[in-house]
Image 1: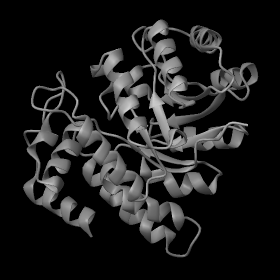
Image 2 (image 1 turned 90 degrees about the vertical axis):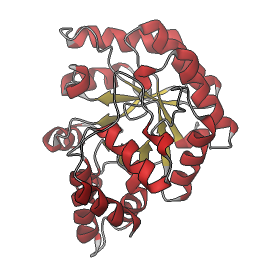
Image 3 (image 1 turned 180 degrees about the horizontal axis):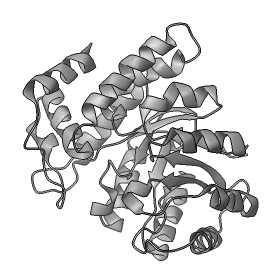
Image 4 (image 1 turned 135 degrees about the vertical axis):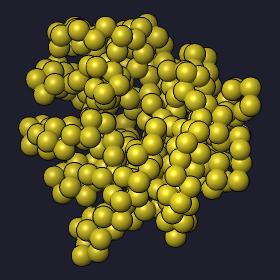
Length: 298
């Protein structure tokens, strides 16, 4: 039996770039190592926070290859392979499996936003058939704000019925607790990760698996403490601290603010580099940023 992706706290890893906007692989590995040694149970590569859709297939594959080469356990990696093109999704998914990474995070094909559940089912049916590997484990990436294509409860039910064992779980980045709660109540053998730390404790108490979050790039120690203490008397206090920090950061555009904070924490302006059409943050509240940095460093 293949080893399973662990439960817990996952950082949706940032992708550090050089001034010429090429990937800084050395810094990527250093950052990933810090996250794993600092309390993260695993890494998500090439998700939204990693600017996945700003990179070509070769770059995306090399990010995974360099991470594996650095010694990271493949079973602590969830890699984003979802593209608009079915053939590109198949290519990235096969590559992940070739690298020993059987857990993949798959966006719906997000350009055609008017498609129905039958079309999305067919997409995943074709993906699974063309990859043709029984070790494949797919985590659905539910982010309707970005994709315009939600994974409805009925679609998830159909996918689980059709591909039991291959459809392993979901990252719910909707920010909708009602949806996460409904999935927890309705599905068994289906692992649910919240896309925000705000619901970490609540989700764990309903049998959820943990969190996969952008802000864990900065709040990995705090999130790990909440995960460990979710059922303890101190858990509620730790969760509230984490929630307050998350809310302070999410007032700003996600990737630009995270790269700004990383540049301040590391005293390294290279962290500000970001691929267009995204742009570095130019306006922020100085006292608020200072307060966030102080709380992160506590």
